[in-house]
Image (tube, rainbow, N blue to C red; front, side):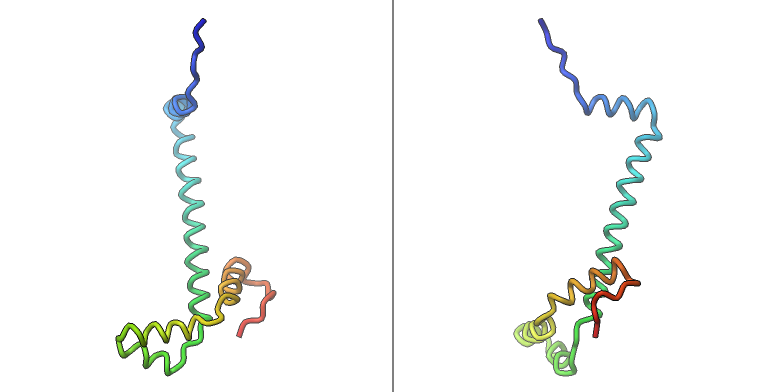
Length: 103
């Protein structure tokens, strides 16, 4: 007695070749989901960077172009910013709701 093996991949290719619109719909769905994810991530990063306080002293340290001073300025800017990450992600996802007080 011989058992016939069923390949899901082969069945999927047969379906796509018989109905090409299913393949195109699958590709469109995946790309639209990826685009929406990338857009949400981009807006979250922009909101986060916009919420960081940069002082005149930090700008001066950046202009020196010395790695040690730049890292000190970055550490000062990013100190205590974990709540800002959460706030910016929340604001980019739900812009009309004011759950967090910002600035």
